[in-house]
Amino acid sequence: MKIAIAGGSGFIGQHLISNWLQNKHEVFLISRSQQPTSDPLLTSVTWKDLEQNPHRLEGVEAIVNLAGESINQRWTEDAKRRILQSRLDTTGQIADFVAKLENKPAVVVNASGMSIYGLSETATFDENSPHIHDHFLSDVVEEWEKAADEISASRIVKVRVGIVLGMDGGAFPKMFMPYRLFVGGKVGNGRQVLSWIHIEDMVRLIDFCIENPEVAGAVNGTAPNPLTNDQFGRIVGRVAGRPHWMPVPSFMMKLLFGELSVLLLEGQRVLPKKVLDHGFQFRYPTLDVAMKQLLGK
Image 1 (cartoon, rainbow, N blue to C red):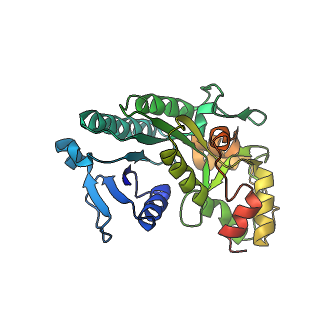
Image 2: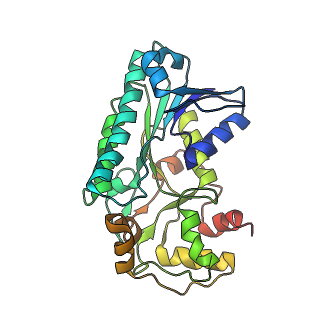
């Protein structure tokens, strides 16, 4: 299969590309600058290259768009504009490229976020749940998905990504650091729900969406067993052989992270109903199993 990916230098993107190359897929990496490549199956193209000649994507069967500025920064007004605009710009560019192709890709998988459901300690959300506007990212995600819907491919998949767990990127190395230092504990009241997924299952889930023509629209990229922050930390501590005892007060998180702290102090119970209904099987459905693999236990 010939696959194009934007945002391939990020945590999920690097794992996807590695997986595709191992499986002998031909990969086009779309980025701002030319990237050095040593694998003959990997071709680097820039956004500018494609603006001048979008037909370089002729024959591409799937496009995966993960591009967008990191949300892991203090949300100043300027940062908010960059976070939103980076997603709208790259998704809009892909829509422009696809519109000019004679042979359009069978599927475009566009990243999205579970923030679209709003925040709740008690509610449970799946792909049929309504959009709730209660914080900055919920608005960003809705605009991002509207932009993805403008892409003229026959099938659009919007993967609402949860907290992706891996040892070489994403949020987990920072989440695990207090346990390395024997000072792990709950954050805030510990009741906020973390909807997580192992990086290997995230890669497999995206591949599943590409390969299954009946999967379309919103797809939750989370494992089937979300946990509260306190439950999550207790399992991490137990598997790692570290204590879970020192709570981090809410005011400290707000002081350190500003408005971004809403993602750390509040959460959502998000279930992957659509992929489960279509027969996807998680290798790491529970955190115990995921932690044992990640921590080499």
